[in-house]
Each structure stands twice: as structure tokens, then as C-alpha cells.
Image 1 (cartoon, rainbow, N blue to C red):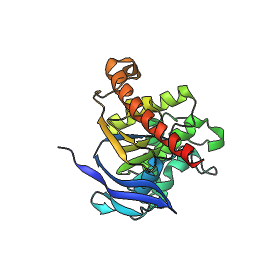
Image 2: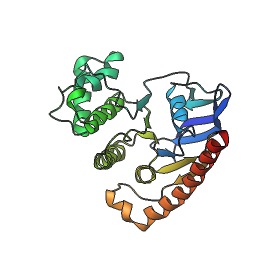
Image 3: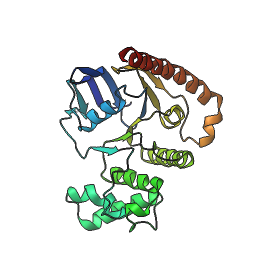
Image 4: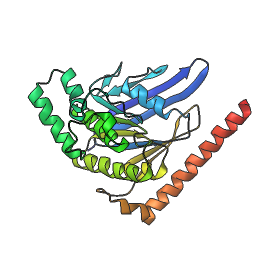
Length: 261
């Protein structure tokens, strides 16, 4: 029996006179990997920021383990498209940062951080600074930092969007492998349909602005997943369905922009 840990209830967001997000309902179960698709400006990142506590809803509420989210907290780990590492800290100390802020003893910090260094494949780079790392390595560090703090849910906003195609695919496999091993609950925003299907146990499609959830689709592909699953009929079928759903919303967004000009 699955346990729902995240509940989004009637959440909307208005910026001045613009409604960015319609009243939205979403449940996320423990150990679920939910990917969110939709056209630019549909409110995907706004919804994620509200769950993270970095923005407040105009109406509605978000509950994590039954407690209303009022602001940022260590129970949510956030990974952005930009790497957001502290440039003056080494890889190891970036990963330790949240643990240090919580008052975890240094020896325990290092034990946890070194464990995640190994999981994300950064052995040998523990004492490098962010400027000495490639984009993929910086994002590995950011993921390790988020996971090291032991969050109930990992929130990811286009985390691989700035990476080249090959690095992006490697990072998808890396993150999926970590999730399959640890079963951490994940809410993952992306524009990439292949990525959404490959990574997600569920794919949520949002409408053009003002955003709402128009489709919540279970991905019927078993775990663990190998990259070769992208060539299977099951993958192609769900990708075709989602491509059509997103295409309709992109056209609606373009029509709305044309109407304004």
C-alpha cells in the first residue's frame, strides 16, 4: 500500500493581475518519481517553488507528511538548472553544507558526504572547487548536496537543461540509478519528453498559462530501466501520447501570445 506524503490542495498563484497557476491538485506517493511537462510559462517551476517553500501560493496549501509548508525546510532538497554551488567551498564542503547548518558533527558530515561522493562518481574530486569542474560534475555535486541532507522529497527544476546531450543522458542514468537504489521521492520539472518518460514513474502534463494539470499518466515501464528502453514500443507509445498533449498546449500558449501582440 502506497503512502501519500505530498498533497497539493487548490494551489493557485497570481502575479499582479496575471494568473500563472490555476487551482491545482496533486498527490505524490512515497518513493514516487513524478515528472512535470508543459509549455514555457505554464507554471511548472512556480508549482515547484511553492512546494519548496520559496514562493507562497495566492490560494490553497501544500502539505508534506500532513504538515503545511510555510517556507523552505530541510525536508525538501532543491536542485536548480543553474548549479548554485558555493564557489568558495570544495566539492566535499558543498555537500556537507546542509549537514553543517543542522549542527551535525564534522566526522559524521564527512562520512555522509564521502558516501555521496562515491554514489555520484566524484571520487578524486573531493577537494576541487566548482570552477575546476565541468557542468555535469557541478550538477553531480548539487545532487549529492541535496541528497546528503536526507530530505523527504527531492525537487528538481530542469536540473540537466544546461548540459550537452551526452552528459544529460549520463546524468539521467545516474539519477535514476540513485533513485532505484534509495527510492527517494522526486518531483522533477523538464521540457524534454524523452527525459520525462525515461525518468518518471508518472508524468504530469500541465496546460498553457494559466497552468493546470490536464493529464497524470503512469509510465508502464518496469524498473530498473536501461537507456535502451527508449527504443521499445512501450516507450514510443507513451512518448507519442505525451508529445501530442504538449503540442496542443504549446499551440495554445503561442495563440495567447499572438493575441496579446
